[in-house]
Amino acid sequence: MTKTILITGGSRGIGEAIVRLAAGKMNVAFTYFTSEQRALKLQDELKDFGVLAVRCDVRDKNSVLNALDTVKARFGHIDILVNNAGIACDGVFIDLSDEAWQDTFATNVDGVFHMTQAVLPDMLSRMSGSIVNISSVWGVSGASCEVAYSASKAAVIGFTKALAKEVAPMGVRVNAVAPGAIDTDMMHVYSDEDIAALCQNSIPLGRLGTAQEVAEAVLFVAQNAYISGAVLPVDGLLS
Ligand code: NDP
Image 1 (tube, rainbow, N blue to C red):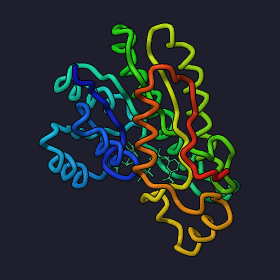
Image 2: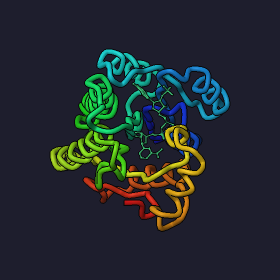
Image 3: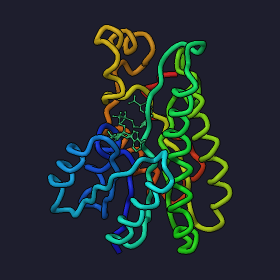
Image 4: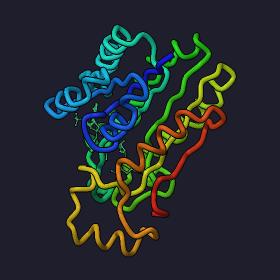
């Protein structure tokens, strides 16, 4: 039977690459938030594969529940959930505003909580399911001037490891992928010079990663039946 994957934040970057890679292999639903035109264009481009785009703000539990109703009305149940939607938050810690801290956690952590709690009951009752959370290398090692982001992504790792143990006996696997510096809009706030210096000085493999490379890792860990609680780095050895 054809599996169904739901990817949050599929309108751009890593999420879009996962949508493209999964299309044709399984039923694909993805959420977007502000990038409606891009999302609808992607849905249209992949219409032969029946890809579904749904608007959703992962910070808002009701928005998540509404989006999930739409996906389930189309595809029935969800086999694979990828919690990819996320935002960056840069700046020195002493200048970090309450709003920036809260929005980072609302998106990167509450978003994972809302979507997982909404999808999980069906997986548990079916004794089958796979969840992949997109963390970050900074959630493992921490980044200077990215305290809120690093803390939020570390929270995603703790969430992943704990939930993996809790639901393994019910046949559900939970993993994280921890990308390094990946060439998406999120990196485009940095100048070409900054990126060249990063690649030369801090990434032993000498270049940014691609969204496609992360997408391949996500689908691998999502589908391997004996991996759970893992945090898979896709980082060119950035640390
Ligand atoms: P992008 O900025 O390219 O895309 C972010 C995606 O998240 C968009 O689809 C966006 O939707 C969605 N999104 C943002 N806020 C919300 C929200 N409140 N509700 C729903 N969706 C939302 O990021 P990347 O593709 O680079 O990043 C994807 C994931 O990978 C993130 O979790 C990020 O933290 C992580 N990551 C990225 C790295 C990188 O170097 N790029 C490195 C390590 C981790 P829309 O555009 O429709 O608003």
